[in-house]
Image (cartoon, rainbow, N blue to C red; front, side, top):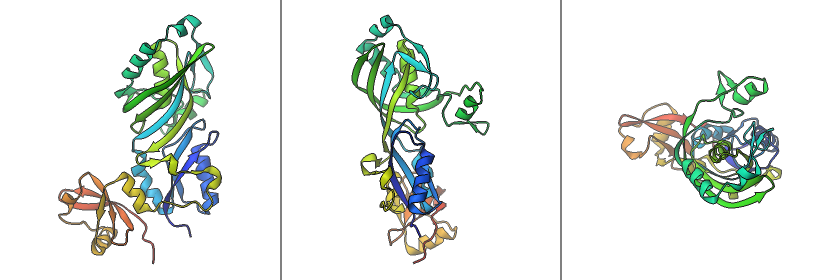
Length: 297
């Protein structure tokens, strides 16, 4: 039987996130596998995989901040805002020549901080129960509502001039729900030349880093991170006694213990270092928000 845990995978280009989940299921011999934070097929990098009962932790991973490195091509816009789409427009040589470093820097500043962003119409966002990209493929016109996201860092690392385009290598730290494709599109629009994404790599999700990830060909025998260790990466840890652990598993509250938790939720870890679950505040008490399956010893 496979023990519950978290697996960090370095997704290659050309695979969907679901493809990685399917391969993990085959490699580990279990159906209970899920992932946090979808990566497009074009994208590479960190995919956080939950195995067995640790899939319950993914809810708390999805909302973590993320770091991406990307290449933005200025001078061309596409119908998907990335290189997988059809080119809709090409800027003139004169327009490209007019894109200065100062103009790029001003556009980047506009897209840094708390911003309102319209996701790409081919995103995985659900519209009336169906993915936006499925509606687009069916020929429907999809216009998604703007949403508030936070881009804490948007830095241009290098600039390369090509025939009819400019490529910018950038690094972005952002909140969950930020679309790097949309940053590329909006930067190009702000500069009047159009823009889209040609490369994207996710290097960080919260405190999980791609340097600790395994390759897609190394899934068999890969070491899983324990649920307790993984939870400590995304939540505050609350040490609980054996009696408290038993009460939480039985749905009882920990009376008067809310002051022990700084935030709204915390990972409850017992004396053996096992993750009991996640607790949340209810007045002065703590109550289980999620319990891990109890492993028989």
